[in-house]
Amino acid sequence: MNRSRPPSIVRPSVRPVVAALAVAGALALAAPPAGAQSSVQIAPDVIHPPTSARKTVVRDAQGFLHCVFVENLPNGDRPVRLATSFDGGTNWTLTPFVFNDATSALNGTFPTNGCNAAIDEQGNLHVVWGAYHYSSNYAQYYRRYDLGAGTAAPIVDLSAAFGRSASTRTDAMAITVDANGRVYLVLQGTTSWEDHLAVSTQPFNAQNQFQDLGSVSGGYSAQQTKLAVDATNRVHCAFYRNQPPGVIAHRIWTGTAWAGASVTVGGTSGVNDYHPSLAADALGAVHLAYVRDAASPPAVIEYRRYNGASWEAPIGVATFTSTQLAGSTTDVMALACEESTGHVYLTYRDYAGVGDLVLVEKASGASAFTKVHTLLPASAGKNTYVRPGLRGQLFPSSARAEHRFGLVVRVGTASPYELRYVDLFGVPGVEIVGQGCPGSGGFVPKLAVTSGTPMAGAPIALVLSDGLGGANAVLLFGLDKGETPLGFGCSLHLTGVLPPAPVVPLGGSGPGTGTVTLLGALPSDIGGNSFALQAFVLDAGAPLGFAPTNGLKLNVP
Image 1 (cartoon, rainbow, N blue to C red):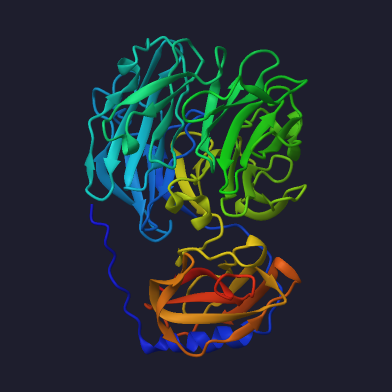
Image 2 (cartoon, one colour):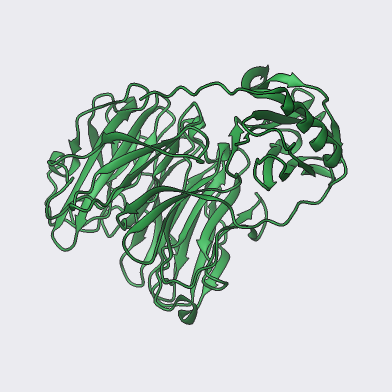
């Protein structure tokens, strides 16, 4: 697969952009209201996946996004396909490669109906898929794909390799990579609905083999299992335990052994806590969300934080009554975190509101979530937005969610179901380049387009946030994106710097509170061009004396 990108051609008309944004930006200090984010179709007809098939998008070291999904073809075939985006999710290209074949549930009476993916630091995509058909037809498969070379290892029939019976029921699908490149996946168990954990015998699964580490639960029901590797390289498993009343439980694999028995995390006086969603940050914490009392509404989306030693008290996020649900699924929630800060993001369909897909956030240490965006618009349709998946894994660092938060969700109330990608903080034509560096308090300043799209003559709003409150920031513009090391892991994310370099004051007071909104309009003759920009917050608490933001590249059609 050709992964190169053509260079941008920039005409002199880019230069007025600097003045236009600089003059207006210094005057505006309040962000415009957030509306619905843009979404992009990845595939027009996909199958309705099992609840465990949620992590389907990864980010490689070059910043390219890769999405795996099960295509629903008219002839009944269910190929596991790969789509790639070279521009942060604005456009997706379907690759010709197909992961499964006739021996691994491509077709037949019981074809593939779900998949998940993870990536390692060498650019290998690790994909697991299943053909899970009630009541007695269950099979699980795995394949490694080298994104750079465009080559694939042989398919591993996991069910056959570990002697699993087709009648052993499972929804095992989660997969992740640890700090050493070891691949962990949830494996079909030896008895029905009791997931096992497996690990590759070599880093990057070089031998194309796995070792069974035993039951995730320790000897009883374990379904809907999710995985997250924490900052100390321990593997966390969160799962639904189908024993009355039905709870969410948690267990840790240390890398050499299980760290004791599983612990109940979501206890309930109602019936069944479902749909665990799990993420780990770089500070040592693990974040979990689930739906409490899903089978006996009112159902509550609940969040808990594992601080490295114990679980902190639960925080309620949203509550849905039986009337509001009206028979719709509660499988409408996903969680991710900003790995460097522990800032948590959660998306869900708001049945208590107007049926839109919303994004809420909770800063580290905060006691409640607040709404950030409407990601997809209001809908009265039953099960319009189902089984969202937020991208992100702690290792390798290039795959972290904080580089660019993205969401994949199945859209539609009946087949054909559409697969859509939503850039949580981006807009079409805007590419987020690299990441920023921490300033005072460990806060990483961010630069984002919050209103408008890059169009000739159109208004646009940029927001610089999470900087040092009361400080000044310098805004740089350039001809193209770039990557020049500045020291301490920081980079200049643009090339061909253009004058002037305006200085803008940030509102707020203290670490992480600094914000400024830059309002302006793009010149009418800028069509067909692109330019880059990045901000630097003057901050004595930062190693360089300033804290850089991520870069942005704006492509104007």
